[in-house]
Amino acid sequence: MRIVERKLLLLINLVVLVAFLLIDISARGLLVPIGFFIPIVLSMIFFVIHFVLGRFRPTADQHLLPTVSLLSGLGVAMIYRLTGGIGALQQTLWVFLSALAAIVVLIKLPNTRVLLRTPLVFLLTGVLLLALPFWPFIGATINGATLWLRIGGLSVQPAEFAKAALIIGFAAYLAKYQSQLTFIHRKFLGLKLPRPKDILPLIGVWFISLLLLIGQRDLGTSLLFFTAAVLLLYVSTNRPSWLILGFSLLLLGGFIASQLFDYVAARFRIWLDPFADVAGDGFQNVQAIYGLAAGGIFGTGLGQGNPNLIPYVESDFIFIAFAEELGLLGVTAIILLYAVIAAKAVKTANLMRNSGNRLIASGIAIFISLQVIITIGGVTGLLPLTGLTTIFLSAGGSSLVASWVLIALLFVLQDQDQIVANLPSEMSHDETSVIKL
View 1 (cartoon, rainbow, N blue to C red):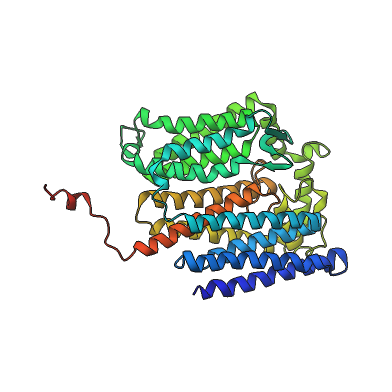
View 2: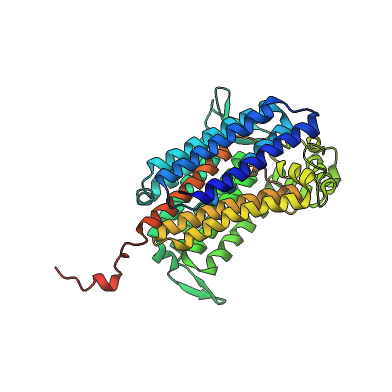
């Protein structure tokens, strides 16, 4: 069973091993035991997930796990290149914990029906997770952003875990109130506008996003969550008016924030002209530009560039490290891997028979795609820098664990859809209306 997945896993594990060996030879001049040990451990982790899928989710997609495993493995390899064995071992531990969380979802979650029954619970859970860094004694401010919880010696970013809760909450809410949200109250300049009271949830999400931006000094998370909510509204209703309303609010919020808060205005100034303050706020961006230029089309080769000149390169700017050492061709391949994940999520959404499940799969596709676009756009200068991590690649555990949980949810959706595919569909309203007691 799952022969295609097994063969692809063998191939990607070989790729990850070769990456470690090239790094040892190029950057260190010798092969060290840890360069063999970490790829072997990663291979074992990925194959355990493979066997769990074969046992509990046998009909789930067979290309998704190898794709995510390759991204995670390459991320650990680049962290090994940038920070050495200790950093790579820490990231391997996070891969293990991510796999453990995914396995729990795969085994313990029978289907997503139970998740869709309580939209308010998941929405409130998501908001609570976003607000946790404000709590005294456990909230922590790092590099000017109040995004973290300090628990002992461990730092956790709860906003990453809020993604799964809010995806489920948004999906359940939109599925439940789809008819109200698609109701046409009036037309204005050709746009079909909803009732004012139906706009309140969007206003609420906009307000929470602004609070995040103001209170946590976090442009990336506020942009990610609000844009995802707008796109999910559009997917649910197929009303362009929601897109226009949503992005009008986005532009309004961005303008207000840039006028009132210096740190937001600084992000835009650095984006427009990073060379205006090369030794100060623009240093990271300028070094990233030099890294892109040094990489060219083919790259300098693994272990042969100078990505460590960029501050926080292993977390915020790891994509630039790949661009410098693997070149345009290498990072194009990485972007294609993300495109495969998004395409699999969209395909899953299109196959769903239940609107709530369809919206969960769409939400996963939207969140992953948006985070990749915002992150890569920020480090390459196409968008203002936000501080979001490049999922599956960047150092750190919160984003990795949350992203693997989303992939596990996708596997659950794919498998349960295959199970019910041969069962009779739910009767339509017309069919049930003739039944009389």
